[in-house]
Length: 403
Image (cartoon, rainbow, N blue to C red):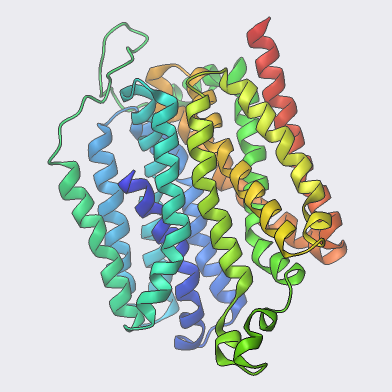
């Protein structure tokens, strides 16, 4: 949980720093956007080789490497004198951060008896990092230079590493390998073995599960990337809330209602993580995944029309959207565990997060294009296709399981 939160604190602090870097290094948004996309790209692409490593080495060691790498990258950022150094630092961060999800999820799936509950609390910690990371960074920047803030953000990673090596736990509490023996390490795959294992993995239900996960990634990135701008367009003028201070109130000028609603939406996702995680211990995860995908598709279609019916309705539909988007995570994580053998679990989650963060990153480009040629309402309707397809894929998995 601590490591998962740290991954997303770092991930979401980068956009806050970008505002400063644009001025500090006199670069255009296009150049800086390309620079940052390299690090984010490695975050997704690196998940696959990280999954291979997760089936070889102990999870504790890999998570420690991840934390040390992320902390070191932010220390390196504090010394950046040009854009090239930022590229190097963010590449270190992306490569290190990519280790986490395949390793952490494989550990939970093999070492926690109440798997769904484990995924729920793990996801809730991630949501705290997502929601509070940008806020923490922004608050620190009010008092300190950005280089010092970068150093301060690096320190917690070291604390978590120390804690990780101070506790004792069994990494394979609830599973055995296909050979019948419990083990936490195996030989590193050769290229031939990797291809062979991948072919075995992509047979049967895992194929449908993988494409369902990919639909989640595309909807997640396409929706959340532009949601602050969308909310800015549908919420009433912020000065309406500060009339008591006068129309020219400085407080009104500094208050960004859309940003607060967006942060609230991410926090509501914690509830979605918890409820869905608990459900995976009681129902078939494929059934829950299909149901949440289906409702999410409906919410995406009605989101813009509902938000035009006033602030209260906007808050309600935003909360529902956040709840459902993050409720998907423990459900698809448990589904992947159901359709992958224990000794291929790291590889399976490597592919999972290649689909989620790697291929899913294309969702931002898709949404950006749609918003240039369609209205906001039409764009959300088109994006609803992703959860709709996800519902059909998860439903097919459930139908096959039941028959």
